[in-house]
Image (cartoon, rainbow, N blue to C red):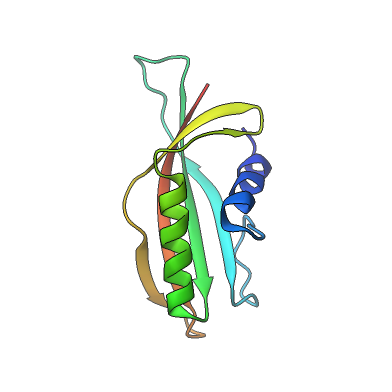
Amino acid sequence: MKTDDLLDFLESVVGGKVISYLPEELDNVVMARFTGGTRDEELLTLHDRSFQVFIRDRDDEKAEQLALDVERELHGANVQIGSFMCSIFSKHDPIPLGTDAKQRYMYSMNFELQYQ
């Protein structure tokens, strides 16, 4: 599975652009990236990867609501991403990270992705 496949899928969830890096100049941004994963020895045909979704916005309520919407939409979802059938599980509720140096509100979410 490629990063672009994940980004394309997530764009349909958030209703806007999702990128794989976090540019300093953008105030309102959704970023996603793969963060690793493991292979379950009992289920050799399944691949297990993790990915992170990071939301930053000038408006705290808007950032929090988008984070909650993304978590609600993805947790327990069985979807096609690229050419793979995938199951997605949230590892935790959205984590508020506070603000950055430019007073933009940030939230982080981590997900487990299983696919064949």
